[in-house]
Length: 354
Image 1 (cartoon, helix red, strand yellow):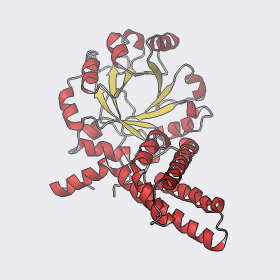
Image 2: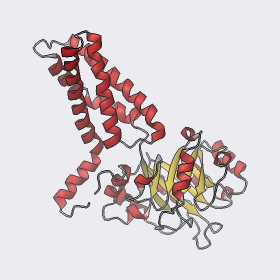
Image 3: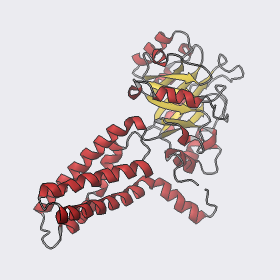
């Protein structure tokens, strides 16, 4: 749903920028009311013992976690247990600190419930900060693709998307994988890093022999370097990347079958699924076979050792059909009337779209 009115569009845009905070606030208030209601019921019908009364906190925390996962933060299933542990620890520590503070401050004129709401409100932003840094840090991240081949205006791209992507994805393709490819301009990486100095730069090299392309520009201005499973001299490439303190990532192209994915992953720390048919061509549709490959990767026993990125044809109408930590979008974002809002839609897995 795109609002045509400037006022409504600005309101919608504000909501997307503050989406997590707004929904977290509502859920936090409701969970606090739920906790205090349970406390009152326990006191009336079970026991007024302070230890029993504190059990209402556990149910309040579970309430808040469940609805934040369902309605707000998009945590992949494989990270739910870790997310719950962090959420429980942070919430419990916050409660204990608030309980201590309540006993130190003169609040005799307030009931327990009133004091709890008052102090919780004052600690709200602190708790939110820690939850977003730990409990819900493994949410969907969105990168925008920039081609090192061709004549893309990086300044124009920056003006349209600003700092809103979670990372920048640089595509490099040569004629070994796309016979129509223009010669790559590797100096673009330095320009990209200059515009996004605080963002991770993830470089995807589409070449059967990437060792020839991995020069100072790539090594100095990339954080993650992805190469394809089908390349020559794989061990040599991995060693060169690691020797320069960069993270090696493997690209699994969904047009191929991978009977032993674990074997392919040896030496790598990141996985990228290329979810289009032809490498190096922007604007292609999402390749249907990619769903099976993504599911296969997510079912690996070693899955929690890797971060998964899906690249190619990712749009808001399909992003909720697969699980990954990261996605890359190029033309869908850059050709949009409102690129920043499009990034936010993808970051929220189109949860707030009709």
